[in-house]
Image (cartoon, rainbow, N blue to C red; front, side, top):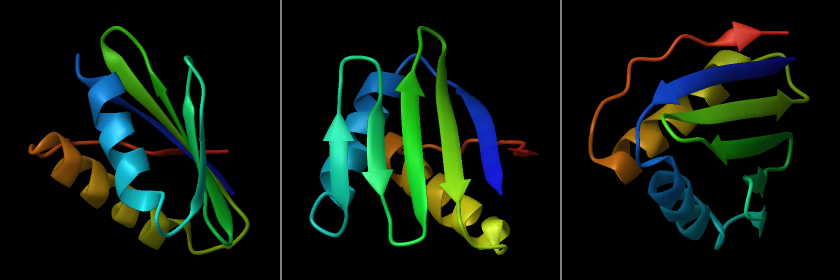
Length: 91
């Protein structure tokens, strides 16, 4: 199941870069000018910074997507040093 959300922020590029650096010691990561990807054992997280948003896509192979969504947003909150209120869409 895939999950997406948009976080309202002007710091999307900085936040995604910090998360990539944080997780690159634990997971394989890749980075382009448009997006960053984090390859977890059962999921892929894509962070796409835009002018006023950070788009987060989780492509999850497991059914338990709620736990992974919480892990991702908790880490993004820590990297941004603020609490984001997000609503996940599932597809």
